[in-house]
Image (cartoon, rainbow, N blue to C red; front, side):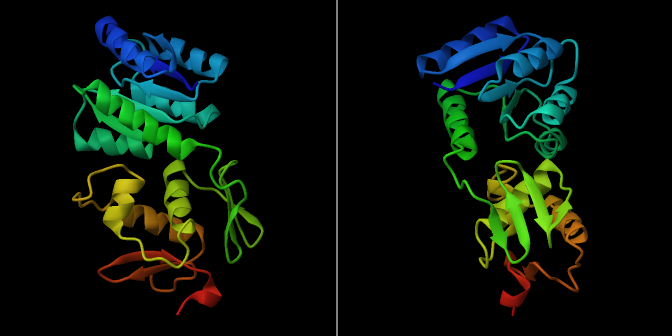
Length: 229
């Protein structure tokens, strides 16, 4: 029975969300403020955190940063803030999904199932290897030629998504949908920026690629140097 921690300051909304989750078989706990929620996350080690950004003591983005500093627990941001800048900021800050209020119980449950499914440790147990690039999915570490590569949470997720599909061309809109959880029709420069950062950290460039190869007008693929055309 997965344990879900809800950080929500509105008592009425909190009760409704807890009831919806409990009816679907989840163990639940909650906090009405950011610092109390952070303490609960550290103490109780939930399987998933649902986080409102408008908390009374600490802004939700700061709470997210504090959680990410000490834990890789999946986080769904559930907030009334619907500005695209807020959405991108939260997802880049380490959120696994973003829900805009108001939403129904069915949608909340579906998002919870999807995030828990992606976080399921029953997935690939061993590291992902593409040439001399290695990703430890459980430990969320990356090495290249035996040397560690420091990545942000979002950079890691982009690289992981590509490493799970070695040699396959992945469209930028697919990355937006599967890594950032934005609609498939979304168009954004975020993917280009993150790919640029990844290339720099992997010691390559778009003009002189080693692992990340752009297929113009289609997308990008991750391939070992010897497998690249």
